[in-house]
Image 1: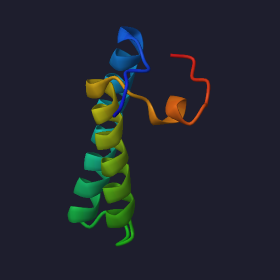
Image 2: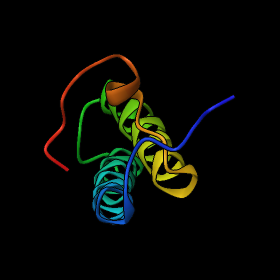
Image 3: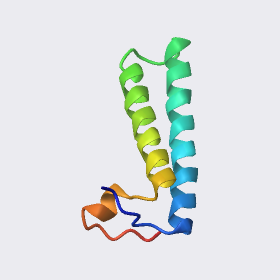
Image 4: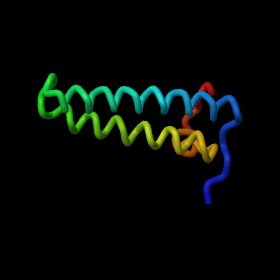
Length: 75
């Protein structure tokens, strides 16, 4: 199925990046909930949150979607 295509350094980098993206999504969601941002912010918060989950899943299973598509990533 999905073979590991990143090393431990790449897994760690993706886990940290995923946590950072999740925090941004959460912040956008909280700002929308407190009505400090426009209504469309809810959708961008959801998209950012889903992207963060995908990056964290990539870190946990050791598989990078970009590398699977042939993109050379530095980490």
